[in-house]
Image (tube, rainbow, N blue to C red):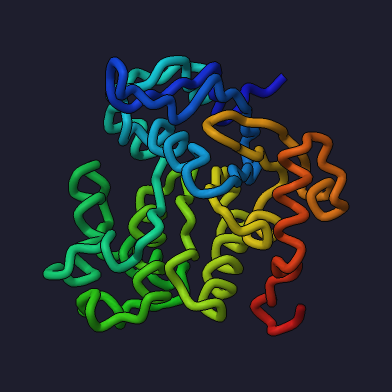
Length: 261
């Protein structure tokens, strides 16, 4: 049996100490198969982004285990981890250095990891995200929100990772641009065999990208279900059903790249 690409076992995250301690994540466990897209959804404050930060190594103060291809990860990640696992952040305005051209932003990870053919890789990854080499010499303020997010995705892809952690990657964008970025992520996953873990509060986004999802409430995973079950409204837990009912107006279909629904 193939080991999961990622596995989370009994994850606990607490902020603060003593009487002020607050449990943000409580005993979260799930598996993500190689090549699968797995979603974490829930209301603001449900703990979904905290889980992602633990997965990425941005928060090392957790209890429990996180396994990559069956091997437990240390709290402090090494360079090899970041070659294989990259994170796309929510805010394309804050994730790029304002004084660095796109070319420098993309060359830096190659230099850190000692990869060759650097300019060739930069040109190729810009083509892959739908921008092209002409964007190498632009600054972030010269780009639209969608273009900035494409650069952020390119910065992750340039190391040829296996896993992308997606922290609400479209929530800061206009609706029309959201569809473009979601279609890009869908295409990249298909072409490159990527594994995704996506955090979102938007059911339409999760339904478009993911195969399975976990619903979180107050730091706990209350239910796992397939996207087919999500679309059919067959959640079994009361909180899950309430969340789905409250989202009746969510967008059920994202327009594809050809412009068809």
